[in-house]
Length: 388
Image (cartoon, rainbow, N blue to C red; front, side, top):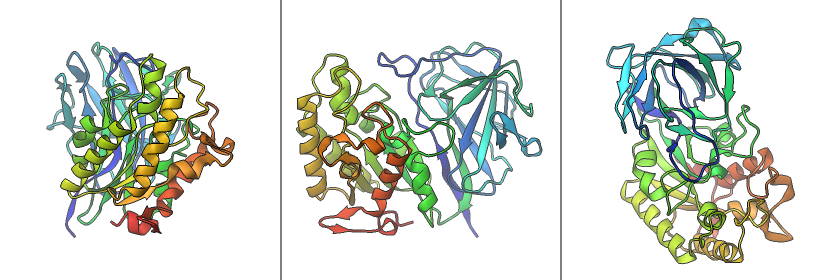
């Protein structure tokens, strides 16, 4: 059977030099960074993607190894395999660039937890990173890339330099790309146990799988946190090998984040225009796009985030998403998790504690909206939405 490279894991990255921060940047020198990467789908071989997109100096990797995770920072030693780039153990990634490794002879299946260990011998400067992946990286002094475990390593709640793992899968394999903000990246769910909405969705799919390109704090129209959705759409969706569908949730941060820095929220018309452009670009590329309504955030504890203007715009945009016919399906996330007595607020059962981010139960409900999606006035099932 013919095989091709398909995205098995993705992690969207941001710049460490942004003004708005929810996680402090990190830099490395003479250190090993060990990271957990849970693949959504399987294949007979893998390849690893590394990025120095936002670095301001070349990034040198002197040793890279991948293995199956045993527990915490410990690996299954017999699975440990060196990662090469154009046949070389050592590589330097120029400023602003990304590299793809040579194929690695390590078979994986859906749910395999890989451990990628990178030894960074030289001063890196602030690292290109995923700032809220709901998973730990482990940082140890010296070259420990091949070590069975890293006793004394410092756990860090971020992910560095890695943007994806591809798997060599059957030719017909397709994937869906979850593209959005914290509601999709998983911030608010319990760290390290894979209870994001993406994880719940993958557990319920019989064919194909979903990869996660969410960025907590990301906006549809404005940079920070991360490049805005329209700017990163080509890189984080269209360039994903095997992509057939897009599941998008944006708007919470366009409406709330400006108030935290003393600026007005995006208007409903601006968001509608942005969503329309996103849909057209997906369709022009031959992808289906399924839009989630904007989740409730009236109870957000962050000063300035919840404003009457922002909440009114949320209601207006949501009504447009439900009725406009621009999208292939609508995932009514807002109604699924709102408090019935106060529709602008999260239901207490789904609140992670800050009035805005979803807990594990809320993430499961978001995943279930794919199975209760609507097209026009009619409901469709998950198989119809994510047709692989």
